[in-house]
Image (cartoon, rainbow, N blue to C red):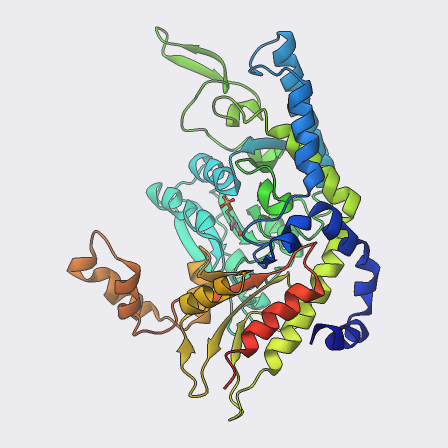
Length: 466
Ligand SMILES: Cc1ncc(COP(=O)(O)O)c(C=O)c1O
């Protein structure tokens, strides 16, 4: 199957040929994948690291002596030097100038989002506007907004392609209140549908009086984000999603101008210039220190520099191209799969061509009678084939609810039942929504995905054809 289909694939996606070097990279840097027979299709869950990233980091740790960076002694200074280098690498990678932007290291993208949520000056004169297809760590900011009396408004995405209608955007952007702080949050790439919303919205929203939180966690691993061209105010990322290693480090890349607005709700070790017990006062340090609670993950930060260098050496534009080609092939094959009675096997949630979309595909599988095949069963079957994919709603309930036609009234009646006041299990939730699909199957490709991975997955999907 693989050998016979490859020429067709290349005919359809000739640009793939330019990414041939990635096949060698897979052999040299990611050989563990094929050695173990792993078909890894969860790059939106986590990227994979190259061997050389780990070896370079290990060498650096074995050769150096690094102390707690909150000091000026030699080992502390050595650590500080590496942290500064990591900050510079992040700014450079995202083409953000030091005058305009600051990199605040966090433990992941969620940590970066929490920093914004807890410190954004929401008042009863504020609006928190967000698209339906945000990750829960962006949805969660609404709790801070609501607690301070702000207005929370969701901007819908429209099934089946799950994009926003531009006139609805304009309508919602007009809701900014002149006398309050207004925050608009959207994903540069949805981790459910892989829709890439226009970066042009940043400029449009600024002009309409909004600060913009651009969630780049799913976008940054396979797309270039130029913050000079697209000056979003708050940009959360997780590094393990971009290059696999290290875990436990993310960043909030924040525009200095917007950061000035944030009011930290507390202080901690490392965030102050002076704090007094008897005087009951504290003075916050300048950013980034003011936002970095306690001791940074200083031994892992050099691995961020190494990871970014790795991505640059591989080439972001080529990564993007390879992902686009493989995603395109997946989409066109999945769309064509039909049972013998002519009924489609697969329903894709999100764009079905490669325009303005990333490398994740969320879908459900249906039997010839049109009944959905349980996504968790698909996952179990995929596990047996050594295929790593993901199922559920991927922490993106809004996109899931719209894609799967879960109705607001079903949700309200479910959540208002007295026995669901304190807790709700997943099985109870499924009963509430009438056994409709409560999630989907997601596969996502990355830089070292290859044609064989895709064919293995497509062969697996064909086993559900009747
Ligand atoms: C779009 C998006 N935003 C935020 C996050 C949260 O990232 P983390 O779990 O690393 O904090 C994720 C993780 O999947 C994501 O895909």
